[in-house]
Image (cartoon, rainbow, N blue to C red):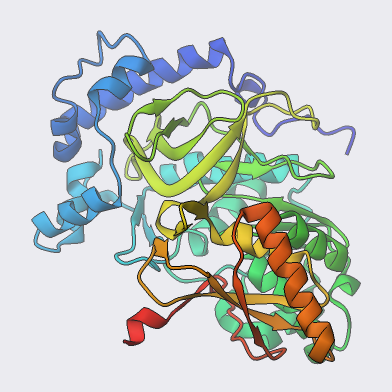
Length: 451
């Protein structure tokens, strides 16, 4: 790989997070605001106090432009009588009849967020970001990808597969999560993909299923890379070690915005790869005030599109809380880094302590193989407040029982106390008894919904 250029886009990636890039960003922001004021009525109202021609910089932009979150989107759709196309025409530069693609989030927390895209958005925004990440992972047109994200309307599915293939020339094996484990492993046996693209929870499940359904360990297939997204996992040390050990290759984290992790032995977070395409900012979750982008800063991540036609973000959030690192990365590549602390809507408060599911998953996976790694956070009341102790249903490994199980429980509780400042109640589950998912891994067992 030494003869490869260091970046997919040498012109832009070489100057990420530099004063030179800031000038490019401001110029593109002004042009985007002009287009939105002329063609997107909803955003034009948000921009009524902004003159793109005299805009002094991003500080003024943040001062004058309101934040856009899921609640505002839901209200916009409601105000449009539930007509999604009418709502989209309020926030896009092009007309809805000019769209080439419509994708969404999974909608696991209610109404799915739409991703309306033209082919320009697909290839020059989303596809460009994925190509930059794939290149840094050493992947290209000679590789074959076992594509295991759900091939439904979700952005991670067909749109992402199409974008990667169009930009990189990589061969796609579009099996999809819907096919379930047996067919996924059959397709892998037949066509020998060397790259897995999908959720980390499905990648974990295939470790269990390969010996049963394919008659071999998952690592036999000679993998080159795991490209993981859609949920926490690749950034959790214990999960990352488990996956890399089983598959015999590097695991890369992608998503929660426009980022992609590097090939450092130890996870360094995801590098933000698209300063020239999307502006990134952190916002205090309590006050809504901007948080300076400096080493160790934390807040809700908000994005603003600097290019695009249909998929336009104007100080919009996906609801993820990020912690950023601006110091140089050991990999030597450009782009500040961010780690996903958790989702704002999945945070739990136990006696004033904020706890995220990804943190719990990280501790549980430290006890593999004495536990399988499968677990559920049991909620008796609607979150975020939890009356202690927090209940966690944990699936133990086969053959562990009696005094050994009691000792394991004490170890897990002590680890939770030390690392997360909570002392949960462990509810043991038999191995294999918790339902596995081929889509996103299940996190909560919501008992309060059954009352």
